[in-house]
Image (cartoon, rainbow, N blue to C red; front, side, top):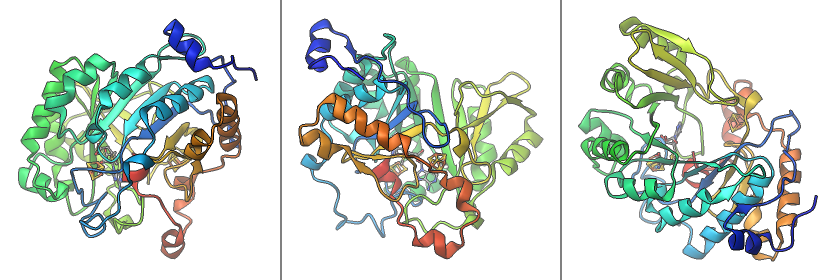
Length: 365
Ligand code: SAM
Ligand code: SF4
Ligand code: SF4
C-alpha cells in the first residue's frame, strides 16, 4: 500500500480530498466495509425513555469533556482514510448531532472528500428534529445528502412523555417540513415501536405520512446498552406491523435498493408511497452488515452491540500517519466476526445481561 507523502496538504492544495485506494476491506464473513456512522456528541436535549432514560442520564451523568471529543479535523481524517478503504457512505449521529456546534462545517469538510475513483461520499444525518427549523438550510448548503428524523408518535401527550423533556411534536413536524422546503431529501422518518407504549400509533403514523414525500420506517425496539431495561415482550415484530397496515392499506414488497440495506421496503399498491420495517430483532441482517461506528471519543466499533471499541483517537493524537491509521482499520475490520443479532435468540436473559453493552447515545444509532 502506498500513500503520497502528506496527502492532506496535497489534497487541500488541489481542492480534492482524496487518498489512493488502499483496497476494499472484508471481514471474517466476507462482509465489506461500506458505511461509517460517526457519533459527533454523546449529549442530547431529549431523554427518550428507550434510549437515555432520566434515571441513568440525570443531572449527575458524566458526559464527555470537549477535549475528549474527536475534533472535526480528526473526524475528517478518519473518514478520508475510511474512503480509501471502500467506505461510500457517512452518517452523522449521536446523541443529538445538531447540538454539536458548527456541525455544518463538518458536513462541508466531509462533502469535499472523494473516493479513490473521484466520487463524492454520501453524507447522511440522523436527528430528533428539534433544531431543524433553524438548521435545515445550513445543512443543505453544506452538502448534506440524506436526512433521517426520529418521530415516535403524533399524539402530543405521548410524544412528550417519550422524549421526557416536554418537547411538542408540532415542532418536529415543522422541522421536517422546513427540511423538505430547504431541498433536503429524500427524508426518512424513524419510529421506534415499543409495545405498550406507542404501538397504538402505528396506523395513525402510516396514515399521516402516506402520500407525503417522507418514507416512514418502523424500527423494532432493540436491546442496545444496558439502561433501557429491554425485554423481548416489548418488541413489536415487523411482520405484525406489515400485517396490521396491510389490512388497512394494501402493500406489496419492494426489492432492496442497495446491498446491505437495513430496511425491508413495502409500497402502497395505490401508488401513494412506501414504508420500511427494520427488523433488528426478528429478522436479522448481520449477514450483509457493512457498517462500522466511530464513537464520540474516537473508538471504532465493528458492531452496535460490541462490548469494546478500538481507540483510533489514541493513534491520531499519538502522531500516527495515514498509512498507520489505514493499517489499523484494515486489521480491525479483517478480524471482525460480529453477528450479535443472529446469536441474540440463543442467549439466555442472564447471558445477555452479563454482556457489557455500549449505550446508543454514545456509539450512535
Ligand atoms: N438523536 C438522534 C435521533 O434521535 O434521531 C440520533 C441518535 S439516535 C441514538 C438514532 C436512532 O436510534 C433514533 O432513530 C432512535 O430512535 C434510535 N434508537 C435509540 N434507541 C433505540 C433502541 N433501543 N431500539 C431501537 N432504536 C433505537
Ligand atoms: Fe436523544 Fe436520539 Fe436517544 Fe432520543 S433517541 S434520547 S433524541 S439520542
Ligand atoms: Fe451489524 Fe452487529 Fe447489527 Fe449484526 S448486530 S447487523 S453485525 S451491527
